Structures are given as structure tokens and as C-alpha cells.
Amino acid sequence: MTLLRLRALGLTGVMAVLLLDSGCVVGPNFKKPDAPQVPQYTPLAPSETVSVPKITGGEAQEFAQGRDIPGDWWTAFHSKPLNDLIERALKANPDLKSAQAALLVAHENTLAQHGYYYPTVSAGFSALNSKTSGQVSPNTFSGVLQYTLYTPAVNVSYVPDVFGLNKRTIESLKAQEEQARYALLATHITLSSTIAATAIQEASLRGQIDATNQLITINTQLLNILKSQYVRGYATELDVAGQEAQLAQVAATLPPLVKQLAQTRDQLAVLAGAFPNQEMETFTLASLKLPQELPLSVPANLVEQRPDVLQAEENLHAASAQIGIARANRLPSFLLSADAGSAALAFTKFLTSGGFWDLGAAVTQPVFDGKTLLHRERAAKAAYTAAEEQYKSTVLTAFQNVADTLHAIKHDAEALHAASAATDAAAVTLDLTKKQLDAGYTNLPAVLAAEQSYQQAVFSLVQAQSSRYSDTAALFQALGGGWWNRPDVPKS
Image (cartoon, rainbow, N blue to C red; front, side, top):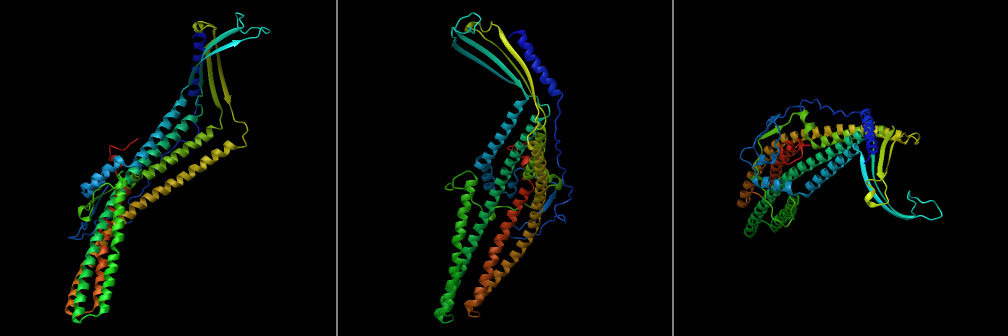
């Protein structure tokens, strides 16, 4: 390449550097929202819950104020099957893999936009065989009419980022990449908490099925007693028919529970990235240990832990950058370009033949567009306001989730205490009523009433037990799930 061409390309570079150095970035600089100055999640600080002795899930729970959330919070339930299932799902769940791919897409788009900071260089080569009419002047210096022209050329173009259009675009894309990262974290947390909740639901269903089978056994025993009394003349055929109807009603509640259990098992398999026909771990309430010490993050840290809040923050960041993009589009844009090459009639001579070059600069300024760009800037500002309010709403919802869960944990313990006492009383009442019926001192309606009370008490007890486990898992999710303490999730 000749010295002249080198000077031309060098001049292009110098102009680009000058324009870049003299540029400014228009639009607002994003300011991270301040953390809410909230001293605690609920009007009264949460205190230790009541305990229910000698019953599964009856342990008292206390809150460790300011303690960090472990990344593997589910291990607090001391269930190896639950640990294995969640860790396997975190490696095989397709929704999680899809979120990982979406993050990669956003990351590559951000890197692609960085390319606009650099000049675009393209090289070309053409070979043209041509014949000129003898009636016109020849196109070649040698005067030949038929020739082959070999033309190698290099083109350099550069758009300096004078007003920060590219910088704001990268800022917006980076914010979108961060949104994708927090969406991945949200999928991670949702997956682990959903598996824990589904496992607890399975355990609850197994408890309800066991209770239903016990009730079927009790009703069968009562039916046998009434049949015996009917033979001896102490009961009527109507009494026997009534108990048979009661037994049938209780037995009819069993198939729906079994169906729901099977569907719950299918859900666990799919969450783990497996097909429903594969064998999965089984769960009972007795196999799960209720965590007795619950970490409770400082309220000011919640906005840094919840992926949904962080997503809303990055959405606000992207909206801020869009204002700068809209404003920069209303300002002049510059283009620097340079071409250099040579032309020869012989392939072996184009490197030594005479060359050509050109150097150019252009500026474009929107003059009239029917106020299109002005309204786009105003729309970008309105979109920022909408994103700001959505962020505030997300923060409020996050605090509500934690507060609701804290209330639930407190009242779950009280509900379990009441359900346990009611079950014990109903069991004693039913047992005494059965003995009185067998001795002929009471009638069937009294037994049926006692049986119905016991049935309701047993189901309430199982549901109260499972609620304590479920709401405990929900607290870990509401506080952010401890993703920042896991090595297998992207931090930035």
C-alpha cells in the first residue's frame, strides 16, 4: 500500500479519535433506587412460635434476625430424598436450561453492540473481463479493446459515538442482560421452592390418605357393631343402612386423594426433568424435620436479594438508557469513510500498479420528521415513569410476601396446637361413644356425630402440619432463596 493511502487511512483514524474525544453522552445517568428505610417487616417483631409436644411438625420456631439465607436452604428440612431431588432438578430441569440459554442470548447481543465502537473494515477483489467497441475511445491506457481488469480494494468506515447513542444502546442491552440473569435466578428459586412445596403436598396427601383409611376402618368397625346389635334386636335396619351410607361416603373420599397423589408424583418427576413413568423419591410428614431456627434478612437487604425486585430495577435502568437513545437520535450523526485500492490488467501486477484512494466525512442532522423523534423521546420518558412505578409496586409486593409468610408461620403454630387438641378430644369422644353404643347406652346418631367430628379433626391436623412445612419453605423463597451463596448461579 502506498504512503499516500496510509496517510489517508491514518487521517481517518485521527478524525475518529478527535470526534470521539470531543463527544458527550446525552440522556440521564441512571441512579440506583435507594433501599426502603423500613425497620421491620411487620408491625411487631416476630417472636418464637408456640410448640406442640409429641406431634410431627410441632417444634417451636424462632427467627434469627439478620442471619444470611443459605444457598441450599432446603437442607434445613433434613431430608436426603428432598436434597437429592432438588439438586438433580437444578441440573436437568428444561425451564432452567431455557433461562440459561436466554441469558446467553442477551449476553451475546450486548457483546455484538460493542462492535459499533470500532471501524468497519471490508476487503474486496473483482476481476472483470470486458471488450470495448472500436468506434469509441478505449478504456485502457494501452489502447487495447479487450482486457481483464483486476481490482483489489479496502474500505474503512467509522461512525463515531459523538453523543453517546452507542453507549446508551449498550447500557440498555446490558440492563436487559441483567434482567435475563435475574430471570434465571428467579427460575432457580422458583424451581427449588416448587419442588419443596410439591414434596410437602405429597407428604400431606399421604397423611390424608392414611387418615381416610383409618376412618374407613373405624366406620367398618361401627358397621359390624350395628350388624351385631341388629341381630340381637338392639339396632334397627335403618341404623345399619345409615352406617353403610356413612362408610360409603368416607370411602368415596379416598379415590380423589389417591388421584391427587399420583398427579403430584407426576409433577415432581417433570420438575426434576424426568418422565412421569420414572420412579421418584417418596415423602411423608414424618420424614421431614421442621426447621426450628429461621434466618430473617434485614429489610433493607431484601431489595438486593429478591430477583423480581432486581429485574424491575434493571427494567428501570433500560428505560433510563432509552431516553438517552431517543435524545441522541435527534442530534447529528457523523460518518467517516476511506477507500484504497489498485487496478491492473494483469493479475500479477495489481500490487505494483497505480492505486486509487478517497477519504470522506459526512454529517446528517434530522431537519423535519413531523415531530416523530420528539414524540419518541417523550414516550421514552413516560416509559421510564411507568417502569419506576412498577419497581415501587414490586418492592411493596416483596415486603408483603415476607410479612404474609411471617404471619402465616406464627398462626400455623397456633392452628396446629388447636388442631392437635381438637383431635385428641375428638378421639376420646369417639372411643367413649363407640363403647356406649356397644353396651347399648347410646344410639347411632350420637356415634355418627362423634365420628364426623373426629374425621374433621384428623384432616385439620394433617393440613395444619403440612401448612407449617409449606409456609416455612415459602419464607426462604420470599427472602430471595440465598442464590448469592450458591456457586452454580451467575453473579454477573
